[in-house]
Structure formats: structure tokens, C-alpha cells
Length: 150
Figure (cartoon, one colour):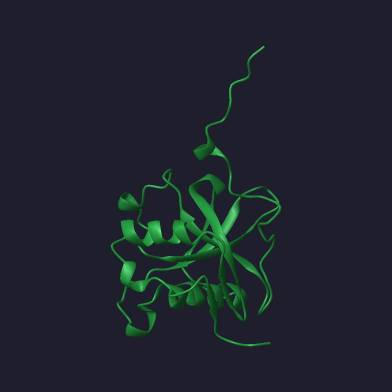
């Protein structure tokens, strides 16, 4: 008896490692990049090179917040500053249009963010996202970005 296997690219990124529920200030959230299933070229929301953070919902979906520096602020040139801006918006519960509920197949979790910094577990996926976004110059220098010590 043969079973049909689900192609690897169709497996959800939502897992036991995905933080569930909106974090409090300084709490942990996930960091994401789009998968091949997400058509970034025709997206009216997430733009190339965006910092994407979020958390899992009880229904199996993800809530994501993103920042792509659409107004070209110099302080948001680096990818980690975009991710931090999206994170700060999320934990503050700030009103924003840069928020979406998403199918987990559309993004891949590559790390974590909290009030002290970012830990990138899959740096090659982030590099790929920034390369296809023509934004390699915004890439972090290290897989651990610290902006505040405990």
C-alpha cells in the first residue's frame, strides 16, 4: 500500500517552536520570510526585503506584522531595524495596516525576536530572501542581533 507524500514545500511552518499568542512587551515572537508559495511580486502588502515577525493563532493560522520601509527612512535601511519596528508595533498593539492573518504555508519561520534582540536560526533563508529582494546590503552581520542586555 503506497501513501502519497506531501511535498516538502507544502508543509506548514507552524510548529511546536512557533510562539502562540501575541507576546507582551519584551516577549518572544517568531521571525519569518516568505516561501516560494507567496507571490511577493504581485503582493500589495508585503514588499521585498521586509522584516516579518509574528505568532501562531489557535486556529492554525499566523498573525504577522511587517515593515518594508516604504517611505525610505534612513533609520530603517537595515533588515534588523525593519524587523524591530514590526515587533515594536506588534507588542504595543499599535494600529497598523502592516498586519495580516496568514496561512502558515506562505512563510517560513527562520528565528525569534524579543525585547533584547533577534536570533536567526536559518541565516541562509534570510540571505535568500534579501537576495531575491535585491537587498543584500541590508543583511545583518551576524545571526545574533542584540539591542538590549537583560
